[in-house]
Amino acid sequence: MHNLFYNTPARLKYVKSQATELSHITDIVNRLALGHPDIAMTLRSGDKLLLRTAGNGDLQQTIAGIYGVATAKAMLAFSGEDLDFKVSGYVSLPDTTRATRTHMTLLLNGRYFKNFNLAKAVIAGYGSKLMVGRYPLAVVNITIDPQLVDVNVHPTKQELRISKEPALAS
Image 1 (cartoon, rainbow, N blue to C red):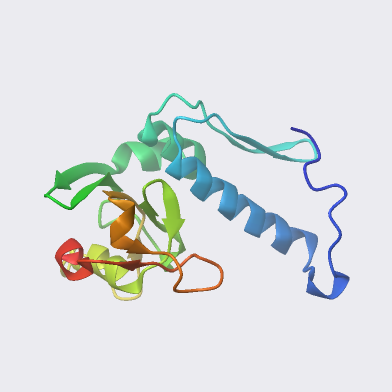
Image 2: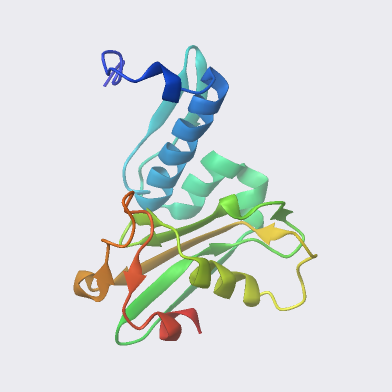
């Protein structure tokens, strides 16, 4: 697809600078790519290539396309499951951190969402290994029966309520 949004009307007063809008778009496409590593994605801005994923289903390769090969190779894979949840993904070592939580991606059945308690649980998993005010890079993919999820918590549908959330966070 080319020029996907060329004819979309927008209220000019809500449009930020081109750099800010591009940053938001890049963030959304990056999270879509992390949620669906089996789909090839390319993001360009003018002549500049911002993202290209292979679409071969390899999450670590998708992470490399977003955060760089060295960072992806240094991340640790994890997985676990119980009767209700299946959790897998990659987390960075304690020496690879960022100043904000924005590089912590939580995915529920391939869909990006925000959940303070689960993000806090990821950070708690590091114990005292993280420096104060630093946050790990993480891609956490949770597979769960959709009937255990309430998506009608927030108008943007980015926040979800998960049944048995305390068990998932532990």
